[in-house]
Length: 113
Image (cartoon, helix red, strand yellow):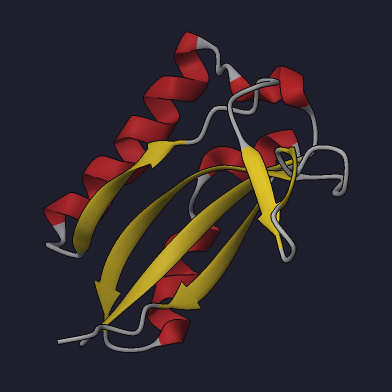
């Protein structure tokens, strides 16, 4: 079994605060993963507000979050445990984020032991 991070991306800051119906859909999706015993880390929401993030670059250059440099932002993440990346992608495909134009990046997590 391998661990995969699912990184949730949005392009519209207005979508950051979900409606009660959207939140219920998200929680049901997450509960389904947990019921399969494939949820390793329920993750967190990453706040996309000014002042909530900084980017540190070589030469000790610090800029405001990633917001000035990208057209989309990471709104949160979870970690799932599956047999392979295809199974993790199948889980990601069921997420309601696609209804609002979001996307999910699936990346294998390298465990250091």
